[in-house]
Image (cartoon, rainbow, N blue to C red; front, side, top):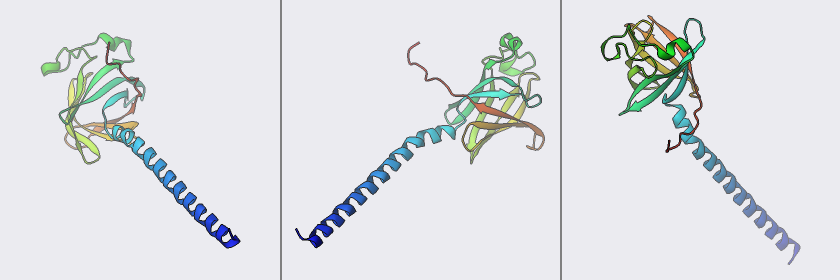
Length: 174
């Protein structure tokens, strides 16, 4: 093999190696991106367990689990960090929530996705029994959520910031 043939073969091998490496890198990037899509989709939904904070004191209050039924979102109190609330009942509530235990109480009802926010439903304040219109706004990473309760117009209300909690995978068997 002459020097020029050897150089030509070397260039051909180099080009093939380059394109093979480029395809491998592209394939690796595609696999990584596809692997992150389910996590991104989960982060864009409010479903899951959230740590709640008092909007006045900014202290942690408890946890609320947001779940979806037929495209509508609901939230129920799952735990409280205040021992007195563990056995409390919603004595100031009305309707089907009157005197219901606070733990397990559905406080978010009828929320639906509209653009980047969730609204159209209401939120209950179990301390006062008052029901407010509600808007949920997730942060870009899905780890924080602005929960705005208001009367009439959104400017007449209060906002709390809730933090998503990581959950252990649940076993199918008890």
